[in-house]
Image (cartoon, rainbow, N blue to C red; front, side):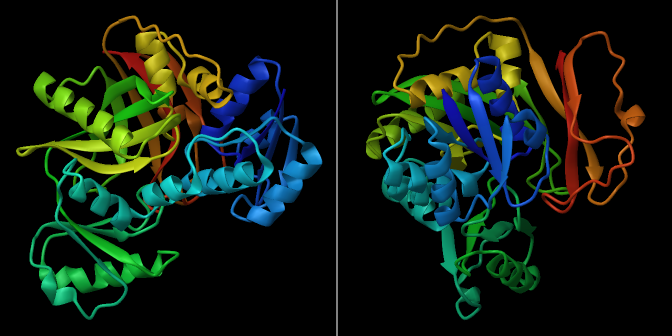
Length: 367
């Protein structure tokens, strides 16, 4: 079997490793030779993952059985478009992928279907700025990936610059303002097969709060600070969303907040997360989301089995953008550390991803 993986970062390295361990021939591509996936793949190709025509031409020359990617919204759009054109296996059609990618469209869908009602508005310029009066609020580009360009705004005086910044970072020059959802953050990795949600695994999301707004410190499993009732409500929200969108097969990552008004959805992505939560789940629950994703993509039935090994957390090693990495300052000597890895070698400069505090590695510990 042969795979073309779009991207070569640490998230893609996880799926490349899985495929290689299962005797796949793996090709990877990116706009420059950077990241651990370059050397892990059988062959690296210098092709920009957002250049649909170039990726299609590469796929025609390689003739892969699948084109795939994890952790990247940009890559998933290209994966879907090229797979549709070439008749290769893919999860969702381009229309649904675009819905997840455009935050205002997705928020409107959630509101109209009474799944997760949150006040919001979209702007392509500053002319209607005075219509927004709810603070604090969150301003973000309508189509950016992850936490790029996401800002917490406490007052009307800060709103103008935040919106201008968000518009500048949006491919469609559009910003979205949403009411700030205060509460405990959590997320779920979801596998849908044959219209049925077969995996809906919730984990707690540890965040910095206002100091590095939106950036995670790590993740915990099981969720400890969200009530069982809220988790059941959130589980129902996922089921309703899948049903309303008539999703047959999919891999989804959904971020939520347990507010005083109940659980609310922050965002959803049609892919596995980029935080290595698959490894946290495998450590704590005994099953591998990477395996499930590939089986699902190939139309092989998933036999889901889960065990309970206890309470685990995944924590990130993090450094400011542009800092020089030194592994010794992050070495964790605790006996309960079950796994750790680093994304950099000594002396390397930490590259900008979110532009604030970058992940340079992570570890998993039994709490």
